[in-house]
Image (cartoon, rainbow, N blue to C red; front, top):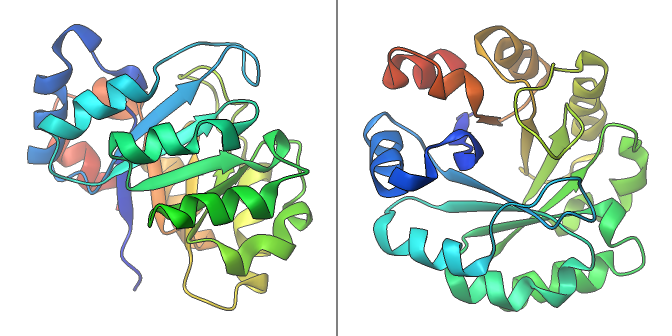
Amino acid sequence: MNKIYISPSILSSDFANLENEINKLEASGADWIHVDVMDGHFVPNITIGAPVVKAIRKICSIPLDVHLMIENPEKYIKDFALAGSDIITFHYEAAKNSVIETIELIKSYEKKVGLSIKPNTSSKAIFPYIDMVDMILIMTVEPGFGGQKFMENCALKIKEIKTQQNKDIIIQVDGGINKDTAEICRNYGATSLVAGNYLYTSNNMKEAIASLR
């Protein structure tokens, strides 16, 4: 059985106590920390930038899984790479004319590369790039805000991606993940799960993370 990497999203955390929140996630068994970066253009929300990633890197001992939901991601790869990101994921829709260049740029900083698609984008759109990246991120909600309902029809893309992969890439799912939807995604072949509200509203973070596996 493949390892399931659990990547809690700090979007749902208490930003006034971010160090304590991250320490709690690490102690509860998180594999990575998922950092949602939004610019207010590609998605209708604004979150954090490279300086905050740099600050998190100083107090976090596990990999930083940085999800760029921004336009022109190639302009900001250097900043996020130097800030201490371990995995940098960008959106196909934001870089349609520069996907290969952006992949190569991330690799030039010796970082793992993730490529993401929004709910309305067909998995076929990224078939040409699957063997170039380390991870595919399938959004099962519209990116921008936490707490949305899981779209199972989007999760079907997991199976479509698996039919194309020629190497052992990670298939990550983000959006509406809880104990029940995690099981759906695992059964389809997902190997990484991003969760926010489900973890932060649980009475026992460690048990909640374990339930996703």
